[in-house]
Image (cartoon, rainbow over all chains, first blue to last red; front, side):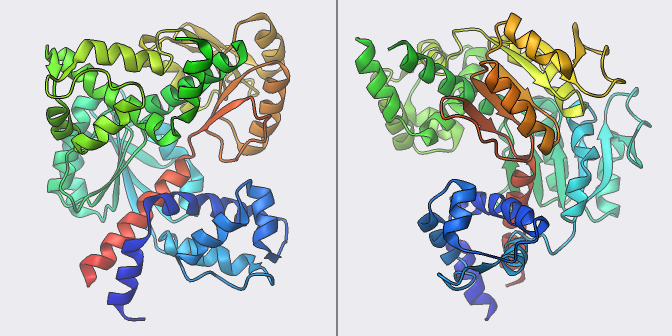
Length: 221
Length: 221
């Protein structure tokens, strides 16, 4: 397949479909661990509590991954979805903000298993500089620019207060970082060619609160 | 308005709309801090990088919040959206899993500002039991059931490994907890009347990875 073709296909896939791929991967990982080699969309649908039709529609975005009726090859499906998500490549990441959240993310060995390598960590607080997360020492944020220029940094994780996050994002972008995983409670204004994936924890808690209150109103009724 | 009416209205609002409300609230908070009293959908649209029509459509789900042209009253809009999200009430939460992520969530004073009060924290690791996050001591998970029965716990936050998360969720549900904020890398099977809001960090990182790789393919082309 020519590059042009694959490009067009990938551009047409909605972010909603992409958001569901990691969940498929999680279930396929479990199936592999259970030694299950083939699974029908019906069985997968029962496990995942989504309709079989949704699964087939999602998979059809990528050519279908195998025959209906005969079922999907678990290993093949796992590998194909991994490739789509770029997990067959390695990515280096740094974390800016060495508070509890930053330390939690730096400590997850599971990210490494997926090809995400933790290269460096930065903070402005002198008490944190020099401490270690796994075998990575926290550096002062003054060293950030130099580090990014000398190392191959694919992803910067921002776990710092909102005002500093905006400033740091600008520095990172000027050094050529192309992807930001943003945990700061602010939307970053970066050029269009920089990928930003936001995790706004307060937003998620508020959504929970909405649903909880909706539910309470229902019960009172 | 009768309860029946408000109920019907709330049930019809999609989760996509609800997911956007906290972001509106964030921008309104900034506007309040800047001393801005009124804002048109056009100006809000410019700040938030969404279309004015999207804003009006979203707000129309809740009756519109004020006149087009004349603009929205920032304070009123902030308060109304807060109420819709249940932020005019207080909610008590506990955290199960006193690792870095749990400690990070327990330490966020911003949650308290929104009416979410941190009541207790639990872990199985004896080295963590007895340590403190703000003025909350980590208790042993054996005390969880008793604590939930004696206290008014609205939300349980799960920041623990996937296998333990499934077990702990069952215990919490059996004690009457009605909402779970789940950070464990697993989908919980809980009764339908229990609200679960998932934050699957790996899924978010994989989505970032997909977009980064898509983008690299584009650049190579």
